Amino acid sequence: MEFFRNVDEILDFAIKEEEKARDFYLYLAKRVKRPAMKETFEEFAGEEEKHKKRLLEVKEGQRSAKEAEEVPDMKMSDYLVDVTPSKDMDYGDALILAMKREKAAFRLYTRLSQVVTDANLSQVFKSLASEEAKHKMAFEVEYDEHYMAEN
Image (cartoon, rainbow, N blue to C red; front, side, top):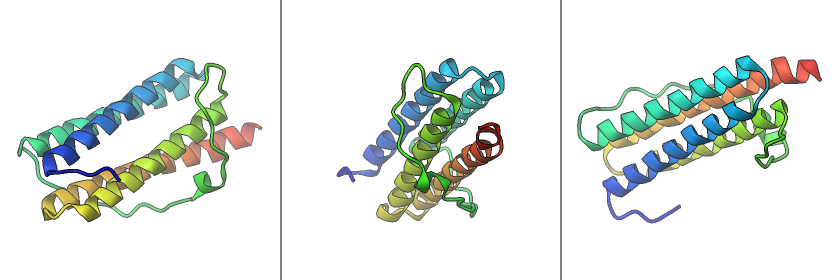
């Protein structure tokens, strides 16, 4: 993990990661053929933007933590091969990529929740980790119910 000198650097890092995630989902939304999945990726871009806003509010002292929710892990992404984004990527590859990114975001926020000393900030990161786990699960369900069923 990157070395941070203070809480602001941790929050700035997390904010940048949320921006990357938002941009990633918008990128995928432009490349998928199914209108429903395009809409799903756009919704997830919106979710990542909400996370960014939440982190900015925490940084500015305007928001406190909410309780993290336990989310079951289907572990589907653990058994799927890594995929590189491409213009001709199919729907299944886009879902795999999304699962892997959400898993990485979950791990990031879980780790950040462990390294900060401020209890409120730790809870914020735990809550964000929970939300990323929900996103991953949504993509796993989509992959299992729609992509696998069609192939």
